[in-house]
Image 1 (cartoon, rainbow, N blue to C red):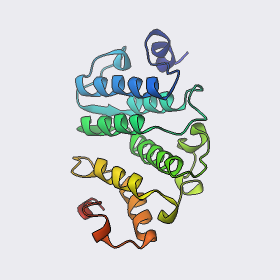
Image 2 (image 1 turned 180 degrees about the vertical axis):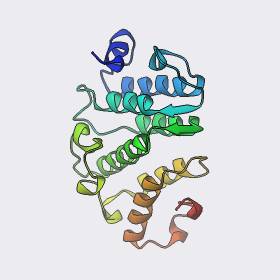
Image 3 (image 1 turned 120 degrees about the vertical axis):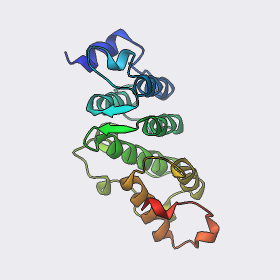
Image 4 (image 1 turned 90 degrees about the vertical axis):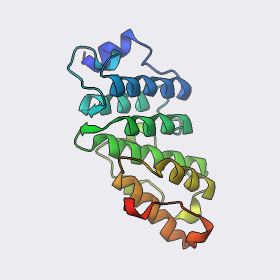
Amino acid sequence: MSAVTAVAAETSLEPSCRKTAAHALTIVRDGVITGEGPTTKGRIHFSRALDADDAAWCARILTVSAVEHQPVSRAEIEALFEISDAAAERTDDGRFDDLLAKAVAHHAASESGLPVPPRTVALSPDTDIESWAPTKAANIDTQVLEWIASQMRGKRHSNRRLAALVATLVGVAALPLAQLPGMLDMGML
């Protein structure tokens, strides 16, 4: 049994629905902020650091069988953005940023009425986001794009993969930037 599985069995980090998954992600966020708590148990963890184990916690929470066939929720995305904001230092080799970009794309597609693969496929580090994520903004709800952009605006740590995905969707839509004021901080690209 891995350390992640053992701790999950002892804590409330075994989600039963999207709401409890979002809550479990806030526990990961708290561990990133303080360097303490159930997600850091049995290992050295510095405050404001995000490491491979933290990224593994997020992936495990988001892909647990209870939510595997449900779209990623807005609450889960908000918790992921909070984790990203909390981490001043990253030693996860980009796994968290990849997971965040894929989770956002999964949420955006599902909120727009598009089919999405199960989370275990969509969020896997072995699955290319281009193999399933929408590539045309005409298919994405503009309000969802605006919400994503508002989450990205002014962030200390930019997720280049997510910024590129949003820029591609906006560019494909050929929408004048005046329609989506301030949607993207072009300095992030």
